[in-house]
Length: 432
Image: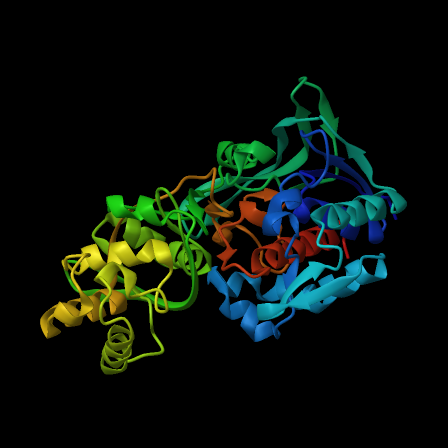
C-alpha cells in the first residue's frame, strides 16, 4: 500500500495532534508553521499553565460545549478526555487535577505541554517546518461530474486538494491536507484567520468569527474605582432591559477592570449571550451576598450598625465589604457617606440592601479578539463530515480545532475540542 504524504497547516494544539495521529497510522507528515516555534497560543493558555482538558465525565464535557455540540460526538468518543490524559502521561508529562476537574501539567508550565508534543512528533518522524507560511490551498477539479449541495441547492463541482502553495509561491503536492490554523483570538500569537480565508476562497461558508470567552465593557464611570477588585461567591444575572427577560444567571467569581468586568462568570456569559449583548440593551445585575435573603442582609447590617453606632456610614462596612466597594455602594444607594449610622433611616438602609443584592451595570459591548480566549464562528460544520473531519466541499481536505464553528466554556473544554478534532482528522486522513 502506498505511503500517504500528508501536510498539516498549523502547529497549534489541533495541528500537532493531527500530525501525530496521522504519523501513528503510517503516513509521512509535514507540518507547516508560520511562527518561529510550535504551540505559540498554547504557551499563554490558562495564564501560562495550560488547562489542557477536563477530567469530568463525557456528558459534562458535552454540556459545556456551547455551539454545535452534536457535531462533536464522533470526535469526543473517538478521542476523549481520558485519551488525552493517557496520551500526555504515556509521553512523560505528569498531570494534576484541580477545582472544577481542570487538568494541568504538574509543573504548572504550558511549555512542558508544548515540549512533550514537539518531542513526540519528532520521534514519530513528523517533519516540522517553522517560519514557513502557506498562502493558499492547491485545489484541482477531480472530475467533470456535479452534485447538488443540499444546503445551498446549487450545483458544485467535485474538487480535491492536491497540495499547498507557500508564501514564496512554491507549490508542494500532497495526498491529503489538514488545515488547523486556529481562529482570530490573541492575534499576537499569529492567529489572523488566514486559514478561514483560504477556505472561503475555495467555496466554504464561514460563520462570522466573533470574540468569545471575552471580558465586557460597561457604561458606568464608577467601575474604574473598582479596578482590580476580585469578588468570589457572587451571583450574576444578565437581562434584556426593555423586555425584563433574564438571559443568563451564574454563580462564581468576577473581576472588575478599568473598562468593565471580567472573570469566569463574565467569560462564560460572553459565549452564551454574546449575540444579545451585541444587539444592545443588556444589563448585568450582581448579587454581592447571594447566601443571604433581603431580610437576613438587613439584620446583618443592623448588627454592624449597633457595633459601630458612632461611626459614619462609610466606616461601618469594613466587615461586610471590600474597602474599594464601600463608597460605590453608598453612592449607588444615594445615602450621605458621612452620615452617622444611628441617623440612617429604615428607607436608606433598605436602599443599601437593594444595592448589595442588585448592583447594576449596563453592558455596552464585548472586548475584542486581543482579549478573547477563543473565537466563536468559523467553518460551517454542515460542510464538514463529523465522523472524519473531511470537507464536504473539497475532497482530501480536513479541518480541525478552533477553525470550526464549535466553542465551549472555560475549564479545558476548548482544548479538548482541539485534541479530539485533531486526532480524528489525522486518523481519517491517514486512512485509519
